[in-house]
Length: 159
Figure 1: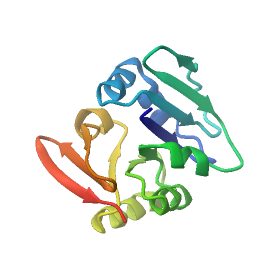
Figure 2: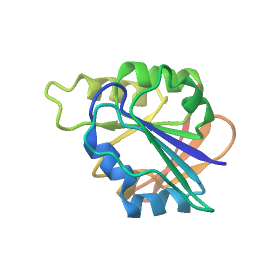
Figure 3: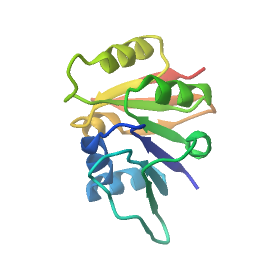
Figure 4: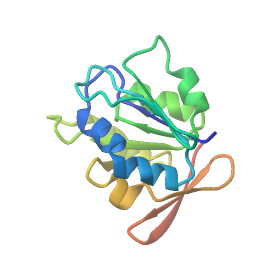
C-alpha cells in the first residue's frame, strides 16, 4: 500500500489540509499510485472526514505521542516547514515536500526550506502550487524522487 503522510505538527495549517483533502487532490494523489493518505491536522479547524474505499483510504488525526510510525510507513511526506517535522522525515530517508505557510509573518520556515532545498534534501512549494506544478511525482530507487515541475525534470537525492 503506497502512502502519503501529511503533517502540520502542533500548529494549525488549514490551507494545507484543505488543499490535500480536496476531491481533485485526492484524485491526483491516487492517480500517482498512492492508495492511502494520512493527515495529521494539529489544532486546525479543517477536519476532513476519514473514509475507505476498495482503492483508497483517508485517515485523519490531530496528535499522537510520536509521528515516527506514520513517517516510517510513508512513501512520501508532505509537511509544514517546522524544523522538527522536516528533520524527522529526512532522518528516516523519506522523500519530503515542504509546503510553506504564506500567512506566517517573519517566515523563518521559508528560510529553512530554501536552505534544505539548496542542499538537495527536499522540495518546497506553496499550497497554491502543490498540485499545479509540484506533485507530479515519479519515484525511482530507494532514496531518489524525480520531480516534474513546469515541464522540466529535476532529480533530488535524499540522504
